[in-house]
Length: 195
Image 1 (cartoon, rainbow, N blue to C red):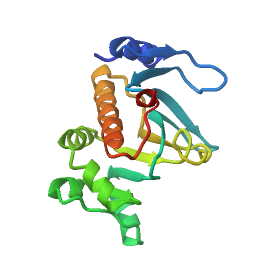
Image 2 (cartoon, rainbow, N blue to C red):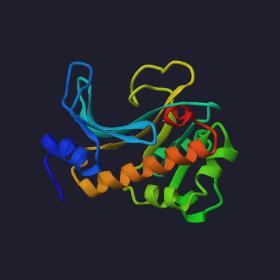
Image 3 (cartoon, helix red, strand yellow):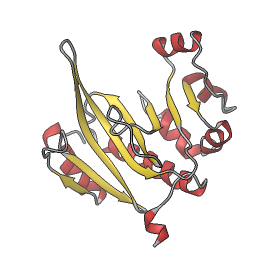
């Protein structure tokens, strides 16, 4: 089912038991917030603007508290990314030939990223995405300021507005699986489970 951007977040929130939040002065678009085991997963649109450029993006963000400062980036291999490799950007191979060929993986902990990506469901959900920009980052909202120590965000972003509920549900499943697995790996805290 495809809907226009003007009500996609409300519909998505309703379809997932989440909360629809209208745009306010502290946020740049309407958004859907879905709670999962004590974490908040936020879906919205963000427009990057400059004098010569304007690009609408879809973002998915889950703020977390890190236990071990584990960080990673996963993105599809492409022409620009291939050039980065030529000039020294290193990537990690996880031992899954097709996945290793399709994606560039960077991390500050090779063992942990390999462990995370042994999860078949996570790999399948990542492979289903046409464009992948997925990271555990210390920058707020992908392009914002550096977050305080111990705070990170699990982030996904892609060009354009995603207006398909099933596609958004697939991204939600990816985030739920990633958060649960990161918690099981003792890389992130869960406020709900601490109570």
